[in-house]
Image (cartoon, rainbow, N blue to C red):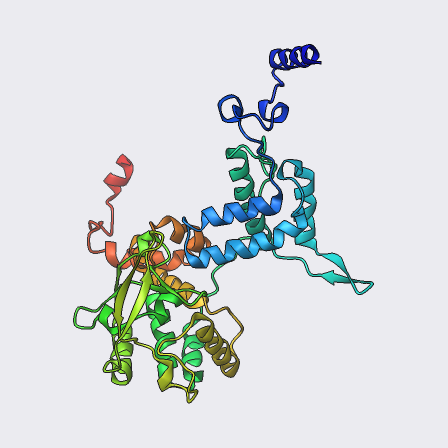
Length: 392
């Protein structure tokens, strides 16, 4: 038996199929001659990957990752070995996510509505990252997501408010603070998480600037702004924005200052910011449970309510940001300037999102060029002699 075992081992070594861990799982020399078995279930892989991912991303992003994996693991099969997952399995899962499917509930099938293309792509992309970790760590030979491309999606065009719609929206806000809040959002293009975390300590009305230092997330924590390009960025205010802030200062400038914890990008680190919040819900509501600053979800509700009262065609609240960009481009502002104001790394985002919208305003650009360049263009003679014409 020993001879046969020795011959079998030698043959496996020669053919390149020998696995020391499989052949001698209890050997004290396992770490010297072969790695431990790397088989892992999908559920265990998910737990390990999420635990390690926590060190790299924000709490808000971690919540999204956890939600996605919590939805994907049962579909793939939590008890299933990660090495047994095939590309075909994943393609069928993607199809079910997109088109919907039926689940058995109390003896009957219940239809489940399909998800949007961007959502499905996000599910697949996030889960692909988990399986790439498995491949890099030796749990599986190859990532089954390799070769699966993202679904094509139509690009959503910006849908800014017109001047008339903007006036109607502001007039439909029932409190002056809400009028000021949405006016400032349109006049500056700030993200809504940045808007609700804005403090008077960040504003210099004499210089006409705002420093964006923090963002408030859906997980109800303060973080640094969304992108590193937007960290501590300076927004130069136009006169209507300055007027709005002066009006708001009468309501909240002398309010109570709070110390708020702001999570830094480095894991486990935070810093305290003194904040006298510009927009304080306590002055606009009689609800005793109102906090000292707004949440993103609550101001979105105020936008929707004002749109209904104004009778304006519905748009998402994020269109306040698009309105600022489109109005600025129509006025002839430099895309690089707009990108810096909005917290983008460079102007490529502006061109990508607003490129087609900018093309619709080419005639306005011609008028601007006529006004600006006419001062520099050399004057041309009004009439040309017949001799000159013959020479031409």
